[in-house]
Length: 405
Image 1 (cartoon, rainbow, N blue to C red):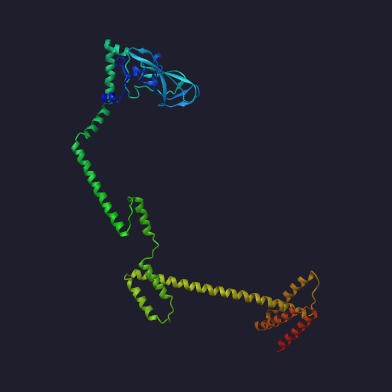
Image 2 (cartoon, rainbow, N blue to C red; image 1 turned 135 degrees about the vertical axis):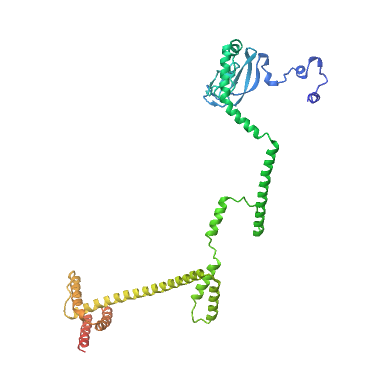
């Protein structure tokens, strides 16, 4: 390194070695701008904040480890240890702050411009090495009783730390036999390598069977559960389900079909494939259920048709009976009142006619219904009241003739 530094520097022709090195001959310092205040005893260095502080100028927090360009100055000595002071400018405002070393307490002291965040603790409670001050060292060297007291404290501390020391020694003994540890580790590696090779063989077989060229992920417990659920709740029809569907199709065909012989042979073949009695019994149950469903659907359709026919007959009969009663009352000479009394009088006539006609047989009512429908159709076509009364008179004459017969 020394030779490289010497050979890589340029020495001009007018260089005078009697003036010293190149820096002194050119009148510059080796630190360049950092040493511009060196004549004042100030050296510019890179200072790192030793703890968390708050700037008193802008009240902003400055974390531990933030670096600044600081002016380093020697301000005194603690015995033979120099005390340095650092002055720097806040990067968030125009405030300057100063920090000084404290070799007596192994700490830093804030002079101005900052406020420290207090996070101090007792070094003796934190299992750290407590620095011994000069007074304590003088007492230990001169006072025998003081030394005896300290030795008793040291023995008590040793007894309290013995379990931890034994545990550490036990851990160290486990690593003492290097050959056994290496052998055990290699056995674990061999076993794991065999498992990996077996898994790879299974994956390769699956990829070859599926004609895939992808990388399979490692199988997990959740994948196994999901696969079992898919297989148990599958929707693909099995062979038994296909046979049942075929049997139902054969049962639904017409018995007088020309392909009866072939159908019976197919049925015998399908039933013959079910060797166990339980399977045959389940098959028969499925067939019976399908037949019952078809019968129920046909009965429902017939029932709907009957209900609709009954409703239509009842509606027609009610219309015909009302027209007959009205015509008979008009022919008998009952005149309809005017305006509001018309509806009341008609309702009374309908009630009377219904009470009087209860003994009439079904055939006579059917005959009257037919005649009334014909008369009403002619009345609806005519707008003259007299023509309507004439038609009603003819209807009464015809009804009397039919009754006499």
